[in-house]
Length: 110
Length: 115
Image 1 (cartoon, rainbow over the protein chains, first blue to last red):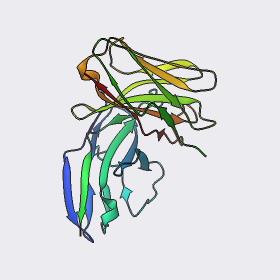
Image 2 (image 1 turned 180 degrees about the vertical axis):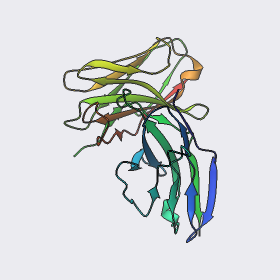
Image 3 (image 1 turned 90 degrees about the vertical axis):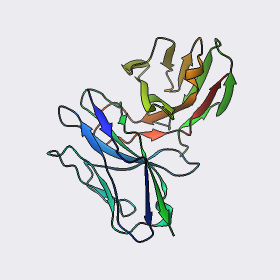
């Protein structure tokens, strides 16, 4: 069964500090991994996906198949990064079904 | 272009009643999926529709059902409501069922409270 684990429910960092949100997954095959973000009072939106290998709002995430991880990183956190972050997985044959982690609430302190 | 629209945004129902939630996908999107979000269970997949056909279903009882119309709009229905059905129900749309390259866009959700 596919599973996504985000070990940290809450994470606080100071503005300008590096931030890393952890995500581990279990899936027998080649999944597609995503990070979704939900800012206060806004809808859930895609932040980035592993196949794009792009940087969005300064965030990057590398898929490590050996460690089955997809950690989200940003070298210098900004206050506007404060939000709820969800790691999600989609596998072949499951079409648009996403399996989400429990989420990490990131707070960037001034 | 308008985003995914869900109605109603908030509703309160009594145990035993049924409820119907509606979702209008982004124009041109033909795939619609539904998720339940609760503090205890997080975000859980309910079902997905494409071309009026249910393609995938999550691990929910038969009280949860849905359908999709020819214009891609979708409804989900929960019958015989229980207190544990209180949740935020999210609808999401995408161009189609193939996963690579298709972004999934979420609506703001329908807040259901069962009393």
